[in-house]
Image (cartoon, rainbow over all chains, first blue to last red; front, side):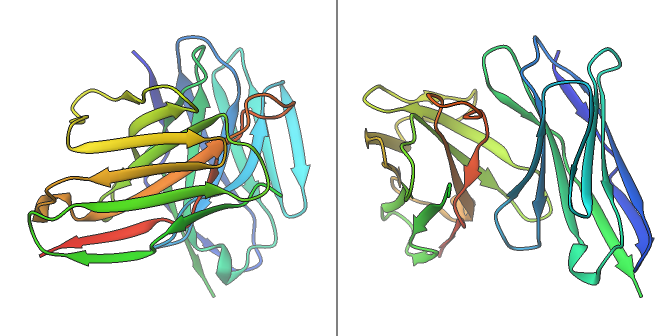
Length: 109
Length: 118
């Protein structure tokens, strides 16, 4: 079956760094997405990885290891506005997104 | 770029009425559009996938006669909730992607529509 695993909730301190992990099992693979969703709002696109390695985009970076079925989202210099749910989604061979349940990130001052 | 709009953002209706939600890609052509539903504190649930000019593909457990989807153009898809009941109250979100261009795998989401059925 197809499955995405990510922690339910994480807590971090303002100004610190946090890494949100995601493991996936899909029928075929066409990339790994990370989205941010603030409470009561729709998801917004953060990153897309299809090749192994680290993609850096400002304070946010995303890493992929296809052989391990593993990705992480790294958030640096955390700000209070980064409090949100972070959704991991893997695209299968049919270009369908398989969604994780999301990781709720709580930032404390 | 890659802006998706939804209208309306809020709907309150009586039980038994039908509600239409529009999803538009504003600055790109959406070869594929997706409709999701999300209940409070739960993850996104894909309802259906629609390609322009063809019938939508519904996920298991989603009633196609209750949730009518029309993707008549490359920039517009509509979801009609027919004979809505209180249990249909939810956050409905559309997304769109342009599968014909490089990097077109990314889905871009509309702002969502909150439906409350009384």
